[in-house]
Image (cartoon, rainbow, N blue to C red; front, side, top):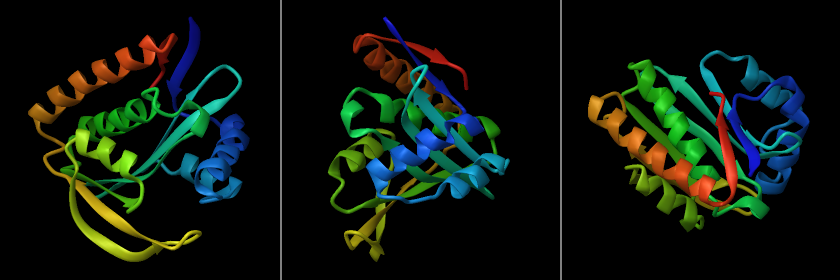
Length: 180
């Protein structure tokens, strides 16, 4: 089995993250932008990586009683293997563990149906639309919310989902090392 890590990135990962961003998002943030994210204690960055390559990255911001999911990206070559589910689940678990985050929110491209299905599996509901939110190409954003992030029931649900996503990744032939 090949080893795959879920962990917080270091400054050494920034070049890989920026390259991943270029492939997945067309340059959402620069090297400096990701470096600022690493330095902010209210922001959480996670990566899934082999020993030599970052394949996925997620970022969330803690804003008062809200967990805002800023980005979730997986290299196109490694999609549909459970990596996005792992990243999303762990971000939600970390938000839950703090106890002060009551809900989670995010925006997603209206055309990104795969991501919308993933978010709905985690209890997110469509609550609105931001017209012309995205550029290159121009597109509306759909706003999704998940309430009750800080309840014991949510903690139990997220633990069950974590086990399911971990099993899915390991069924792909990976040995998952969780360093979060």
